[in-house]
Length: 182
Image 1 (tube, rainbow, N blue to C red):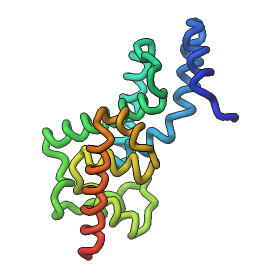
Image 2: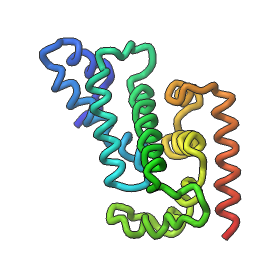
Image 3: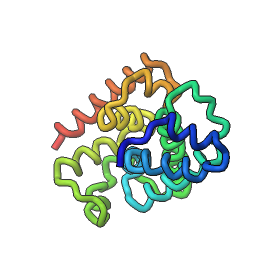
C-alpha cells in the first residue's frame, strides 16, 4: 500500500459521505507509530492497546475541530501523549504504578509480557526510562525513538523549545547515570 497523505485523508473527510473511509486511512497510516509511542510510555501491550483505542476515539470525536494549523501527526501525537499521561496518572492514583522507584523491577514485568521481545540491554534502557518523570519520559521518547524535531515536539507537548531541550538533556543524564550504575 502506498503512503497516504494528510491531504488525501482530509479530502475524504471533508467530502462528508466518506468520513469512515478517511478515518480508516488515518488509522492505517498512524496506528503502528502511535502504538509504539504509547507503548514506550505505558510499557505493556494491553495497556498500550487501551490507550491507542482511547486516542483514536478522541481523534474521531475531534477531527472536525482540528484547525489544520499544525501537521496532523503532531496533533495525533499530542492526543496520544496526553492519553498516555492520563492513563499513567489514573494507574498511579489506583496505586498500581510503582515505576518511579528504583526498587520496582520493570524487567520482571517486561519479561512476563508475551509481547516484549527485547534483550537485556533493551530491558535496562526501559528501566532507566521508567524512572524518569512523565514529562521527561515523553520528551525522551519523542526525541530518542521518534527522532522528532524540537519544534514539532513543542506543538505536541505545548512547551517551549528551550524547555524541551533542557528536559531532554536532564533525561539523557539520568538515563546515562542509571545505565552506568550497574
